[in-house]
Amino acid sequence: MTDEMEAIDEATQYRRKIDHTLARFSAAHDEMEAEEAKRRERRERLSPASIIESTRTALQRVVTATPQGESEAVSEEQAAQTRLQEKKARKIERSVRFGRIAAAVVAGLVFLGIGGAWGAQTYFDAKFTQVSALDENSSDIQDADAQANDENFLMVGSDTRDGASAEEGVGTADSNPGARSDTVMVAHIPADRKRVVVTSFPRDLEIDRPECQRWDPAQSKTTDEKVPEQKIAKLNTAYAVGGPPCTTKVIQQLTGLRINHFVGIDFNGFKEMVDAVHGVTVHNETPIDDTTLGKVLMETGDVTISGDQALNFVRARHVKGDPTSDYGRIKRQQEFIGALLKKVMSSDVVLDPGKLSDFITAFAKATFGDNLGVKQMMTLAQSMKGLDASKITFLTVPTVGLPNSRGNEVLVRSKTKALFDALRNNTPLPDPNAPVPASEQAPPTSTSKSKTGSSKSTTTSKKSSTTG
Image (cartoon, rainbow, N blue to C red; front, top):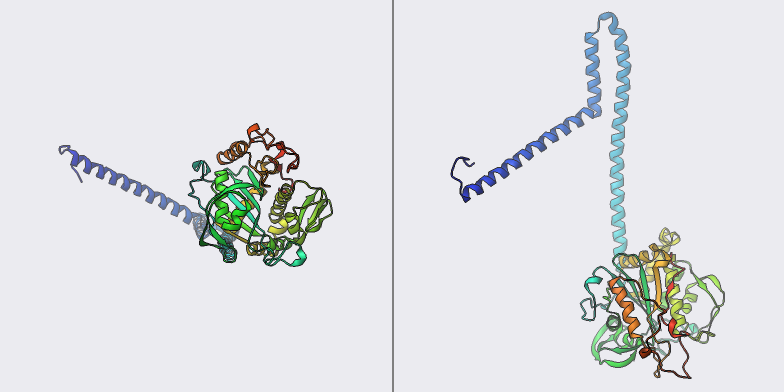
């Protein structure tokens, strides 16, 4: 210890600070000890054994102090009170014992539940085919800080013919080798989880395809071969030559979004997911009679479709009476995804272990991806289910509405920029019906037919009525 009378220099001041700190710690320790002693005394005083003992002691004092003539009457009364006190104490003791047992049981169930859930998630995650598709440090990503906690799911429907039969009318692996991305869409979930925007990209969208490594669909990985860039190409060629990594690169270039989840779904295994949940209900406005696939769905209104019907429902692109071709199919795909997610997240499936397990198994079997598993897919499904339908927007990337001379869809660059600026920065979406600038309008032609009916409707924004 230091002497308070000694000369004050820096060393002395330092020692005194240490002394004062130790004194404070000691005082705090003494206070804590006193508080703990009071708590122990209170617990002992209120314990069942203490209550019984204090009752007996009090009764003994009363009996000792009471005259002989009165002691017998008092003793009987006190004995009755003692019996009541002992009964009450035993009841308290049983309650405490039961509470401890119940707490132990609940703790055990929670532990088993967590362990079981973790085990189930690990089991199902092991079934997913993992591929390398993401590049979250790409220089194509814009406004990276604003996207820090956003979730962007790039979903690609890979329409390979592996396993398809001739009866399905879509060709076989021999007649149509390789893999194609017949569906490309991005589900954007901002950090605040207050909306979900699903944007589809036409398969014939004209792009500047970058150099990519060749994709081997049989091995689900890239090879050492490099495919040179192509200045004018269709969007679906990015997947055909470069698989998931090349498709991710193209979408990040077009949108500036940081794609942090890649979900590839093999359409041929898609029907098993639908059958696992015993069908999905869609709203069909007009009969779907496809020149290639035949009569896909002739009923109208709310119709529950099976796996085979669902597969053709999302594949059909030559529907009689539908001049929009890919745009009509995009609309059906968007509606179906909403309906499927609604069914999967319903109590009919979530509370049925058999259905839920069958769906996850079928989904894992038909799905491949990067940063993909049960937890990530539940994030997507729960985000879309938990929101009001008006907060979930399905739309198509803005195009001029007419195919060019190469038969490709052409982006309206200004409207595309406005759309993805709004997504990246979580600001209100631009008006999809805003006029196309004159400099970006399609050149007049007498032979081309509009894919969307008019240039004002090239960006289709739809509030999903099937997603709750």
